[in-house]
Length: 258
Image (spheres, rainbow, N blue to C red):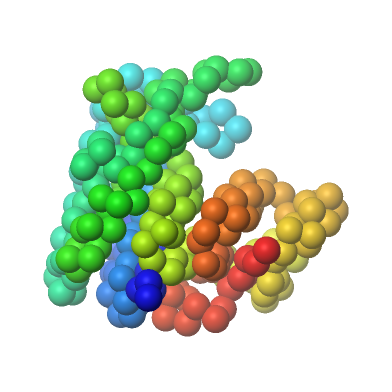
């Protein structure tokens, strides 16, 4: 029988602030069973770029990753943010190990093809090695994964953390009963973006189509839900979209089902 595994994806805003990071790590440490944490860190990367005199360019909310910016995101995501999380988990008795996609060759991909916009050294995942990650997890190691992959040719690539979480969850689903949890600042998918009490408790593909057409679901929530449905179709057992302060009660939030 497969063991249960909870994969938490948390945004940079939460892990970059000491108070919210401490609360997150407390809750994460108390999650039963095997677990994985995937994190962002965009605000820290932008702040570091400013300190180093490197311009940050965003197009439609996405970072353009020049060679200079790639150095910064590698330092910040794979170093500063990742190791702060690992140290915090170790302090809570969790044997955590920080990883990028290059470590143990767990996530490989390619530079995104240029269509209308060249985002630079941004990567799309080709392969996630669930077997190697599972071998770590089965020895009670908790992977803490930064949003970086590599191209197997010696190059690091900046990759969206939601994508890292989804691909990792799919790769681990043959080995565990995986619950994928996307945490962000809101308590779930909202029917009114200005009302945090308007959480939609259940989201199905038909509801997603209807709410997207009506404009209720828009912006960054569209790719998040698209990733969620793709994960479910690829063997992930459950996907939940909720706030980071609800990790102690995963009955809350929006539960995504096929």
